[in-house]
Amino acid sequence: MAGFENDVAVCKNLNFNETASKPHLGIINAAGKIPIGTGNTFPTPEILGGSITSPDSSLTIGYSSPNITVSVNGSSVGKTITGDSGGALSPTAGNWNILGSGSITTSGSSSTLTTQLTGLTNHAVLVGAGSSTITKVGPTATAGQVFQSGGSSADPSFSTATYPSTATGTGKILIADGTNWVASTPTYPNSAGTSGNFLKSDGTNFVSTSPVYFSSYLSANASNVTGDGTEYILICDTITAQVGGTNYSGSTGVFTAPSTGFYQFSTSLFITGLTASHTEGIGIFNWSVRSNRFIDIGNIGAQRNSSNQYGIGSSWGIYMTSGDTISIRLFVVGGTKVVGVLGGAGSPATTFTGIKLA
Image 1 (cartoon, rainbow, N blue to C red):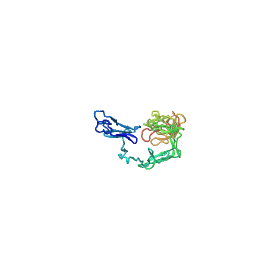
Image 2 (cartoon, rainbow, N blue to C red; image 1 turned 180 degrees about the vertical axis):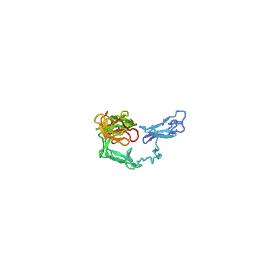
Image 3 (cartoon, one colour; image 1 turned 90 degrees about the vertical axis):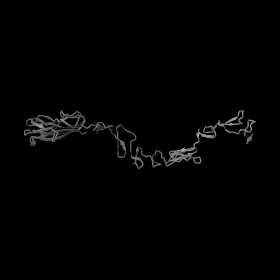
Image 4 (cartoon, rainbow, N blue to C red; image 1 turned 180 degrees about the horizontal axis):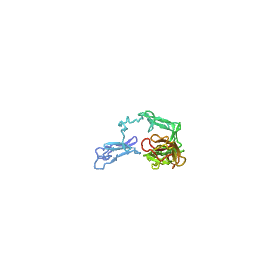
C-alpha cells in the first residue's frame, strides 16, 4: 500500500514481487539492512540500516542485532560517577549534584559548573582552620614583617619587627636596632677558620684571628749561672702549651710575636745558691725593640731564706709589632758565680708564659 499522509509520501508492507503470497515486512537483518521481498529466486531489494551520526560526531545511533545502540562521544552513555570515596554514584532523575564543603563551594551558570574557595582576601595567606575549612591571615600593612609560627595550637602571624628584604652585602649579619632587625655595618667571616680562632675588630670589620699563647718551665736546675754579674738567659725548655704557631723556642728561651697586638707575659724565678755577698739582683723582660722592663730585687743576699733561695714573680703587658722578640734575663752581682735557678715540674717552679690579648 502506498499513498500520502499529511503530505508525506509513505509506503507500508511493500511487495516488490507480485508472485509472493504476502509482502516482506521491514525487519533489519544481521547485516544491518532492511530486506524487502519474499526471499525468492529474484534479487531481494535492501535498504541499508548501518548507523546515524550527528554532525558534530557527539551522538551515534547504531544497530547490533538484536539491539539498537546509542553512543555519546564514541563511548557508551555514562551511568555513574566515582569520587575519592563513596563508590560509584548513580544520578537521581538524570542529575548528579556536585556540592562544596567548608570553604569550597560550587556555582553553576548555563552549562558551566565552577568550583571556588570562599572568604578570600587579596594577598592574604590561607591557613587550615580544622578538618574542613580554611581561614586566612590578612596581609600586614608594614613591609618587611615576616610570617612566624604561633606554635601547634595557634595560627601563624606576622612579626612586629621588620627585616631587610635583600642582602645588603657579603658578610653582614642581622642586628637589632631596638625596634627592627637591620644589616650590620661591619662584616664578619663566613667560615670558622682554624680551630680556636676568635673574632677581632680591625677597626672596620670583624676578622678571624688565631689566639697566641705559650706556657713553659725549666725542666732541671741551672747551676752556677750568675752571681758575679754574669747575664743569664732563662731557657724554659719544656713547653706545656703552644697555640697560634711555634712562636716560643724551648731552645733559646725567646718568644717572637707572630702578629701585631697587645701581649701579656709572666715569669716566676726561684734563685738558689745565694750568699750574703750577693748584694744585688735584677730580673729583666728583654724586649728587642724598646726599653726593657727591670725587676729590681734589691739586696737579694739579705732576703734569701734558710735554704739560700729567693723567689720572685712578675708580669708585663706590651704592644708588640710582628717580629718583635722578648726573653727573660737575670743578673746577680756582688759575689762569686755560684748562683743558680731552680728547675723541675714541681712547685715551686721556674716558668715563662705569654698570651696575646688583642
